[in-house]
Image (tube, rainbow, N blue to C red; front, side, top):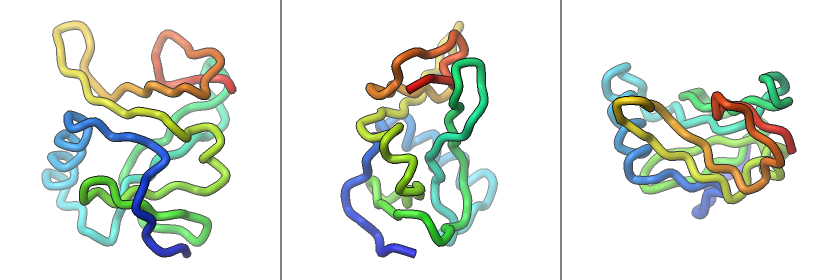
Length: 115
């Protein structure tokens, strides 16, 4: 497993960080876990985003983003570098959003893309 790197290839907005910290506290997730950001095959456009708390794995690179440990497999970086994860809370839209400059197409749900 790699050592912790300073700059994360993805950006978490302050709103997303606040929500993630709230979830982590509410679910009593300890500091051995980090925020896994990645992709997996599937979804209506080809790839789906992975976002959740997990234990570090051997292939992970570990980043610190304002005190939030971010875990990402190196191979996922080509799909995610420069992506911004935000949290929106409104009448019509509530949840995490993914603004990915590497996505060629996205679907209406906003959690699936093609590259």
